[in-house]
Image (tube, rainbow, N blue to C red):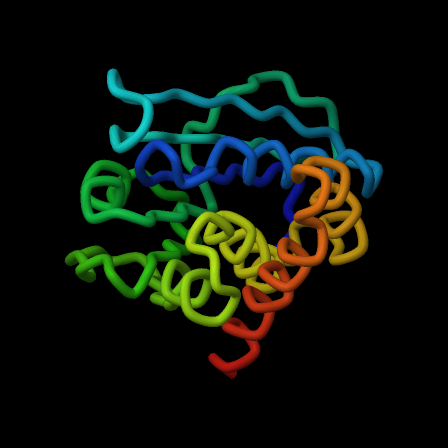
Length: 179
């Protein structure tokens, strides 16, 4: 899927770790020798309010750092899906959690149990963001597995490295089960 420029929008609610997920994807791109820009915005009430992280990854120089027509949208809440589902590149993909009600949209939607996997398989719902990073990496190949793993190990709190690696691999497995 790696075009010259790939735009990714991660959306959900505050506290889901989407800002960290965006930072990890951007850092992985840089580790892969690409250019990346990451930006974020929070709703008025950070935890529980709307949250959005955006990443632009490019093989070339990034002349405009904002996401305008993302190729990938991750929506972990109904609110996030409804807000962003109509602003996608024509060949784009929307990744939603299984708790999110599918919306009527002409775009390809991939629905996976991201939050449930983090909670039930890994035992910590707080790593849903890392499960999501695994899903995005496996579906799009926008960054290499090696780079994303290195970025995660660099960014997660000390002592949680194994937990987060498990979450990343669980995200890959969710995508492998699709095929």
